Image 1 (spheres, rainbow, N blue to C red):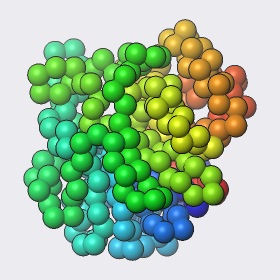
Image 2 (cartoon, helix red, strand yellow; image 1 turned 60 degrees about the horizontal axis):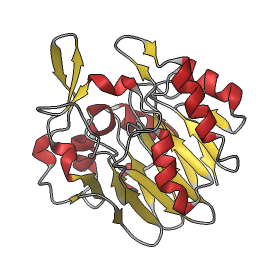
Image 3 (cartoon, rainbow, N blue to C red; image 1 turned 120 degrees about the vertical axis):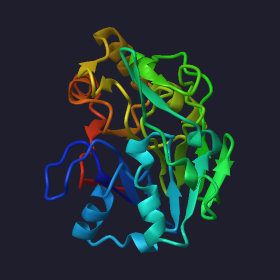
Image 4 (cartoon, one colour; image 1 turned 90 degrees about the vertical axis):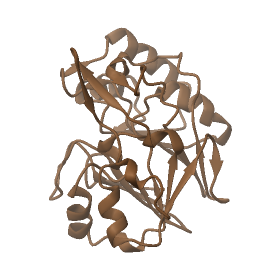
Length: 264
């Protein structure tokens, strides 16, 4: 299995960086896009790397925010066969609040009824290799960066967020922003015993440029040290400061920037 970041906030190569996420995954049985980023960056970077997006058979949209699913309409214009798995709540309105201003950050709800879109509600097994799960309990090491995120009438509870389990020779966990909390997500995924975990931790607010407290970072590191056999690759919304802090305590934590790949 090979996991490549095609859209990510940072780049050290010829690919274009963009605030958002899209991860291309080749397994024994599938060619997968986990999220599609916000705009045309995915298509430009895929072309540069010679990755044929028309051959993708499975798309997972991790949650209902445009930096992860904004390019879905464009993808559907070039690929008429892939199945798109999205939690049904992901198409509800989503907002980011700055002072008294609420800005829409949701998906294009016109795509909800697209024939390639499969709406799911909670945990879901796609096949013997791929399964999705949600996290209802967010009490451990919850990031206050989430406090600015809303649904139509309340603060977001992130029931529209899903995570991907890939079961091959080594089980891998792929997540988007980890709004439910990396600690809570890992606890639910523990029954799969993932040896690889890729995704963002949502510890940095891109609008205020603030990182969560040192106390929270210490607590996260303490909890993740329970998984010394797991290789953690973080990205996107974790933030540089949070990554450097955590990586000093966790020798098994790495950063996956745009264009970089992990092979399992």
